[in-house]
Length: 619
Ligand code: GTP
Image 1 (spheres, rainbow, N blue to C red):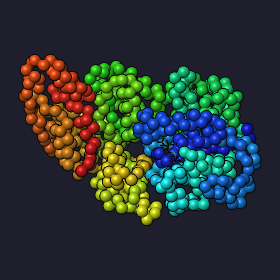
Image 2 (image 1 turned 180 degrees about the horizontal axis):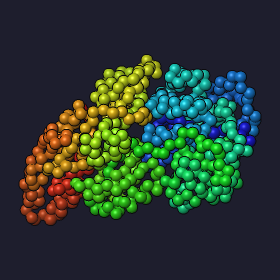
Image 3 (image 1 turned 60 degrees about the vertical axis):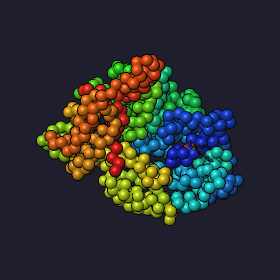
Image 4 (image 1 turned 120 degrees about the vertical axis):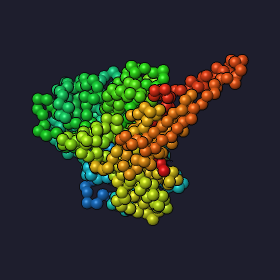
């Protein structure tokens, strides 16, 4: 197909602003799904992705749209005439809707998906207005030089204030308020105008079918029966069935067994040409043989240069998984391997802790990614997992000039080998009602945040930009932000690099045994405070035993804080007089349930919650 008839676009939005609903609405209008399938989307609220506020629905399709020519539009607001531009030809267009992941941990994947488009619909809730991810995603679209069509959604709601929000967008992002379309994905109002605007405002793809093949892998999924499906945007050249393709960053050659487009079902086609978006299978067995952002070219006739911007996934948050009671190491390994086959961005290596036994050290893109993996492990394989507190990857500069990423505080080399310990930093945009500025600034300063700037979206709403050590925000900063702002604050952050500081390892000893899973790396000025807080928390989390348990915090050989858990001597079943067997059994059952997610360290049982207490930095 001549590229003049193609438009490639994504929908970008903050969570819950209606991205999936609008995608389904566009699919419905173009005949890709039925009325019943459209209604179903409103029902599937309960799955994991829903709970965690991320989308893995099929927001990806090639749509056929009959463009009727420029019209004034019958929606809630006439479309602004595109100044100076010649209007596109009347006829049938292929509109390729590309899916972008919705969460802060998947920044890189979002930017790759955007690199495959020429334009985006920037969807904003007509009641909530601009939120942190609205901004983060809009900045990415601007950086990728994409045409942005602002769409104000949910205008059916009584509290909708679309004009105000269009002005906010103009003020903060410089998108003219008159360009904004008003719509309701729920009722369908304004959807026709959106489709027309896609054809009129987003430029057709550039690129030539004559050139050698150059295609961008913007997403990949494991298919249980057919191997890995790669989702691609062809930039130049043509991809055919049976072609031998080279994945340039991976350096591997595969033969294409099937290719086509998503309608949204995978639908075979004979070829994908410059400008097209589609999928291919090439006998690729695991998701780890494919990298998002890699360039696909022909083995015999490669393109001279890969597409720019490729980088391998970078794990930033680490934790250990150990088998809980009733689960063996082998079962845990099997479960982790199974999951790993479906997720290209987490990694794992065996880990043995003197205190906790044999488990696995895993790396994740971020905290949400970690939570998803942990939940899936337990749900999909029905095993018990004890998880240690997440830590960030510190960069260690050794005296001999070598740098290495330290995935676990337990592996910190002795001080005499270390030149510098560097910690990862993020830049965070916080959006909140201006009346909460004071509280948020206080909270942020307590987390070693450095204020960068303050910008008003309107007199009532403000964007605060901070730089934080990642370690200070990963655990509960977001929850604290929500509580300080009565639920209104939103945040998005991006890694900006590593910075050296005066960091030390805080060791925790339970009953005189050092528990590496509880050790943390902290700023020296905060070591004593954190140590004290930590052992106070541990004292609450660990049950009394039949003996006294000392809990100590230490930096090097110096004990900086100590607590003692007093012994308990009572036999809990004694008061049942040995008579009431059902009551006794109930008590034992209860004790057994309580022991779930416990880990035995020497003679002491430590519950899962204690391992998570480590990163609770709240004041
Ligand atoms: P994630 O899947 O969490 O990323 O959210 P999303 O942006 O895809 O939002 P989704 O389409 O799931 O919509 C979020 C909620 O808003 C759902 O309850 C929708 O039914 C509702 N919603 C979406 N569009 C509209 C609209 O135009 N009007 C109203 N009243 N509700 C809408």
